[in-house]
Amino acid sequence: MINVTNLRLAGAAAAVATLISGAVSAETIRLAHWVPPAHTLTASTIAPLQEAVAGSGLEIQVYPGGELGAGPLEQYARVLTGVADVVWGLQGYTSSQFPRTMISELPGALPEGMNGYDMIYNAYDAGQLANEFPGTIPLAMWLSEPNVFIMRDHDIRTPADIAGLKIRVSGSAAAAAVEALGATPVQMPAGEIYNSLQTGLIDGVITGASAIGDFRLDEVANSYTIGAPLGRISFYLVMNADRYNSLPDGERAALDTIIGRPLSALAEAGWNARAAQVLEQISSTGDNTVYTLTDDEVAAFGALTYPVREAVISGIDGGEDVLHTMQGDM
Image 1 (cartoon, rainbow, N blue to C red):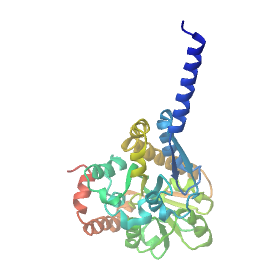
Image 2: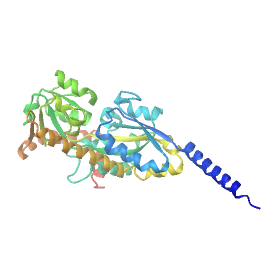
Image 3: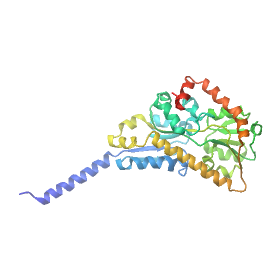
Image 4: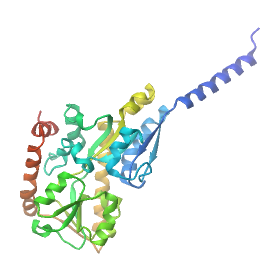
């Protein structure tokens, strides 16, 4: 005779064992970045990534604000050495590693109406950027909103207005544009901009408007100029390739549903939305000057910055081919 009680107990034990087994096999990956938790990165990129994999049991534990290492220049090294499994960073902080990717940052490189992430992935999918991402799987790559002038006590209307000033830039592309305008580029991590503007170490910044809100720059800047062809900033979210390949099939499959262009689209949209929000906020504040250049004023800046694009690309092996692929011409 079958003992129903024993069968129920056995079934319950099996269910518990399955749950325990699942809990044990669930993986946790460490994602490191160096900005505050309230930064645009969290809502636009990290949260959607966590939501996409939650059903698989994969947990993404976030270490913000440099908890796994404060230096943003060392982010890529951290993921290669296993300090973190996933890192977020800017190509511009280590420009020499990403010469081809950073073509996307140059003034006028992004065609009107094209997504920045599509531009980068066009070249990546064609195998033209593989050497720039050794040992990692890019989870997302995207561009910021257009760069703007963020100044303290200097109104910028013409290239002559910026000549001789010290301008913080995030990478070699923006540095070349600043030099073409007759100013002095100063490279420093974003976390140092606030104090540098406040103390006069720099006169202004070239970066996207989202940074005004993310780093509270409106507290130390008071003049903003929009529309100059100054390029954009590129970003990456990459995962250690060995760690990615070691994930259980189900968890890796869940990750694959969002990485690449889908996650990059969310990130880029988040940056653009934040920029629009910040510009609206500072425009309504009485102690700020927010100026949009006229077409003629834009052309005056472009006469100096567009040749930078050609000069930089000519110095990159295969640069013209990469640009054409990025723009969808090949």
